[in-house]
Length: 592
Image 1 (cartoon, one colour):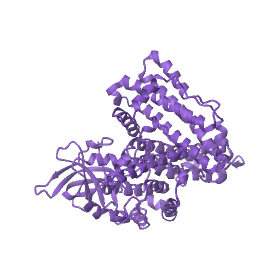
Image 2 (cartoon, helix red, strand yellow):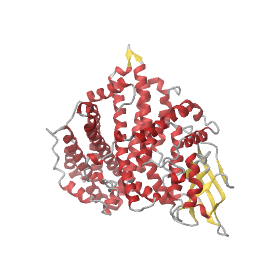
Image 3 (cartoon, helix red, strand yellow):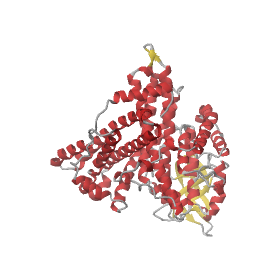
Image 4 (cartoon, helix red, strand yellow):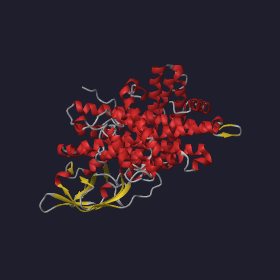
């Protein structure tokens, strides 16, 4: 029997976590490292030498490269052996996603195929559907796409107009409609298409094959970035879909879409880590090579600041993503041990952590955007040239804040889900929040404590800073809180900073026992810089929220309480950043 997940989704805000219960990337086993090495070798040999050809969308190239990955088993890491795959643990799949995440447009194509393309059929398909499609998707004989978005629908997926009507003989659904922004649309053989049957309020899902009569598409979209990724509009004109190709039950499509998006969000959180590490590699290589005023630009304090900040944001994202991934993995294994079948265990195991999935999508995509932006700045004028690698990294990064639901939608989703779970008493959110509000003047002391005890006290105070606002916000806006999106996003930013900081604290603390205090001091520097920044963001976001909901005569007192809870013992972060940068510069690669 697998033990219960350490904490429920979102419960990190009200519960302390033991270091021993947290997974950190340094604990990956040799088998996972071998898979990661295979992913990296594949990129080095097949993708990086062909980036220009990929960006020009050479006909047949992307599909052939995906098939090559299939021959190595890289398309079947989520697929059970019974369907021709090499089913790996959730953590291993996430690490492989990270490794492939540095592949620019190719990473988009392979993630779409293995994730939102294959998994709806694997997790929701019946045995016949899985037998027909999954083995060929795992080898690359077939390619997959996920067709949800429609013109005019955007973030409101359930407002789509694609319709399916049962034929008179009851053998087919006649499908009519249009989908847009379909990744792999130009070559995907198998499409998961979402449509409403008759006048249903909610979507159903269908497995559609590209070669069926009535399926057509527009030319490739011209995009800012990820130019090598096939993105098309697809049209369905009286397409006859066999009734046996309905995926799941009638009206279950919206649930399928949402649950697959949860999975896509946390996987994107891993994918961007790979992109960030590659951008840092280019940044430090160039900083070491570029000479100005008689020395390499890596020797200048302003450049060291940028390099260090790139490292801090990437390290924090990595810490948080794998912490969440282990909780998800434990949850999936617990469900399977209770007799829940494979697909449902995987889907519900992830959905329980919808809050963390949304936060990691935002946290990671914004970290990558920061890293690639600073990479361009480090390159200076050359960074604006398409002849340098950071041009592609910069343009390709931008889509991640839109993919899998915009970052704004995900910020709102995280808080909305947190509050709803609290109201359903899935965990004692409102009880703890009321207590925090009533006792907000009580602050954990942080002076004269050992290093990690001090950081733990700071995190307790920062959690309390978030919690103390929840009752006031709930009382002030009540049922209309959903309309106060700015305030919800303030809370989401605070929540995200708490999770990122606590995850980094837990990782650095656990590393101390693995490598010793002296070797771990550079990671103290990373944690110090992150603490400095997280506390400042939480303070600002909290003040923005307070002046939005609190009566004027209460604002000064509430802000003073918030300031006490976000107070930290300041360290010389300039020197901490310099030490981080100098190690990066010495190694000339990401080495954290």
